[in-house]
Length: 229
Ligand code: NI
Image (cartoon, rainbow, N blue to C red):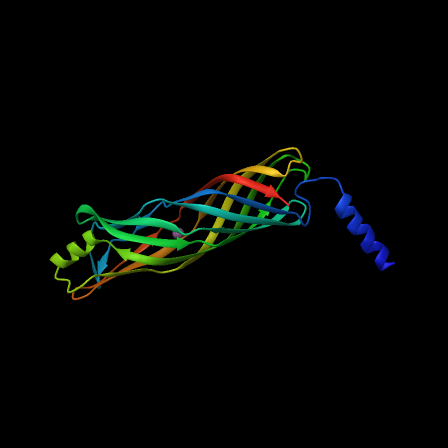
C-alpha cells in the first residue's frame, strides 16, 4: 500500500498541474540590492568625554542579492537572504568640516517567514514577511584623511576602526510577477526594513578610543529576476 501511495504522489508531482507557489516549491531571486541606512548616531565619545555635536554618517551600499524561498506550505514561505558584500563609506560630522572616516564592508544574512495572500495559481504574488537579521561587519578601514586629522590630535600611528556585529528584527514587503511560456520566470521587487544597530570604535594610538553608538536601521531595496523551480 505504501509503495502505491508513494508512486501516486510521485506521479502527481511529475505530471501535476503547473501551479505556482505550492508546498515544496523553491523560488530563487537575484538582482541589485541597496542598503540605505537611516542613520541616527550618538555623539562621538573620546574615552568618557562626549564630543558634542559630532555624529557618524553611513552612505548607501549596493550589492548583488541571492535570495531563496522555500514554500513550507501554501501561502507560507521561508526566505533566506544572502548577497555579495556591501561596502559603505563612513563619515564624521560636527568636527568643523565633515570628514571621510573610512569604509566598512558587511554581510547581512537574513531569514524571513513570508505570507503570500493570493491563490497559489496567481501569476502576481505579493508577499509580506517578518524575520531576523544578522549583520557582520568586516574589512573596516580608516581613510588617509581621517588619519591626518588624528595626527593633528597627536596620534602616534594609524587608527584602527571596528564595528560591532548586530542582530535584529526585519520586516519586508515584495511582489513576484510571473512571465514566460510556463510562468516560471519572475520579475521581483522587494523592500525590507532591518533593525541594525552597531557600535563604531576607532582606536587612535597615543590619543585614545573614540566610540559612537550608531543605529543604521536601513531600508533595503531590491529589484531583479527570479525563477520558480
Ligand atoms: Ni535600531
